[in-house]
Amino acid sequence: MKKTLQKINELLETKIIRKYAIAGGLGQFYYIEPSVTYDLDLIIDIAADKNQLISLEQIYQWAKNNGYKTLEEHIVIEGIPVQFLPVYNDLVVEALNNRSEIELYGVKTFILKPEYLMAIMLQTNRPKDRERLLKFFEEAEFSKEEFQDILQRFNLEKKYSEFKRRAE
Amino acid sequence: MSREFSNHIAESKIRYHKNRAKIPFEEKVKIIIELQKIDAEMRKGNRSRLRPKYYQVWQIE
Image (cartoon, rainbow over all chains, first blue to last red; front, side):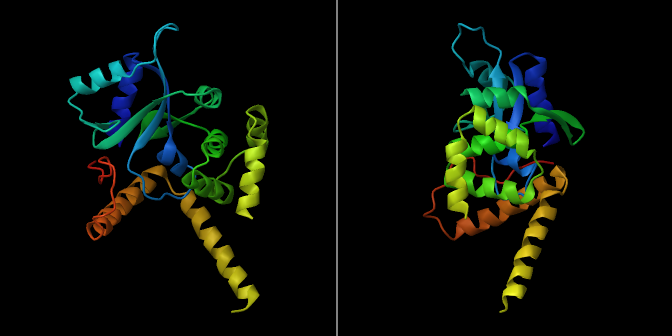
């Protein structure tokens, strides 16, 4: 995992990506009890001009140059399948801009804050997301005020009410 | 089972999971890999369960 994170940081250093943050299952398990997962999801901001279409081409080229294989939509970086997800909506853009800088295995890296991960889970709303969101309420340390603020600004209050109704 | 006892069990379970949420991330990754191994074993007995190709035990140091 240390090598994976170091190689991911190389994408920042070579300016192939502008920003990244760990998201998805591994991002969630930073805050809650882990369960099984098989990939590392990264939310990324690709270094592309405003008029250019967002393309993962440069990342795939970098992977090829490093001898990394692809598995479906993942690139296997030092043993871990990594999925690069360009920011896809305003909530995710804001989540990435407010990412936390942390250190894992002695390597500087970035992760989405719990309040944003929770809001994204609520927005995505798959059974898996609802299950993990419930665990966040039971296990994670987060700011209720910040979470409420995000819900309000991204019109997620109705979804939150529905989630609470189901959870009861 | 009394209501008091079942509440006690429920509370201990919540406490247990909350404590597990606090373990260092590096330890959590070790747990995830162990869970992947268990999952892989279980899948051997259930070949009908289609899984994506990237569902593999992480080969990391």
